[in-house]
Image 1 (tube, helix red, strand yellow):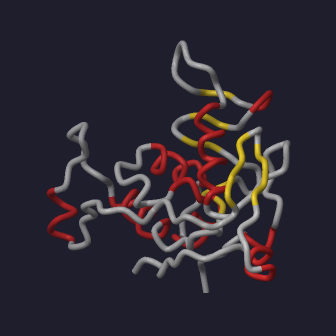
Image 2: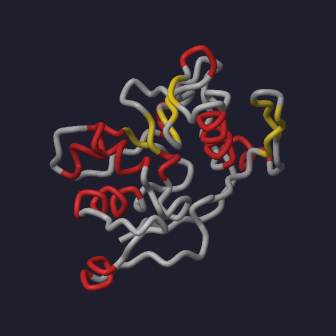
Length: 180
């Protein structure tokens, strides 16, 4: 069952009663949260619908991918979790299998894969790339590497999650562990 998501302001703006603006990579961002997973999208919930569902590429979604997508939908707006923590919560062994499922996520941003970071709290990957700046790798041929992860960082900033200049989570209290 997905988490209930509400729009709210950051603690700082709630205290002083007005919006504040922060600069991130020369882009001014309003610190009021915006839930990017709040969209209308068909997401099969019944077993019957899932067995017949095919992506735009005509591929079926595996049971492991459904488990990853279902869990990812529960991550609250303004919080992040790690590939490893999803793995542990699902009783799996490979954080890379979680990354692979999210790389092929046909339900983005409804399944908010941008809320997953590396276990060392680094921004991690997004759309087949890993990292930003000098640490960036992957990406498509003939494209500038790091743009997708910069986009991920911008999405998270809109939800109230910030990172250091090096790409690490700035506030560890935003790390969400979704297991009992």
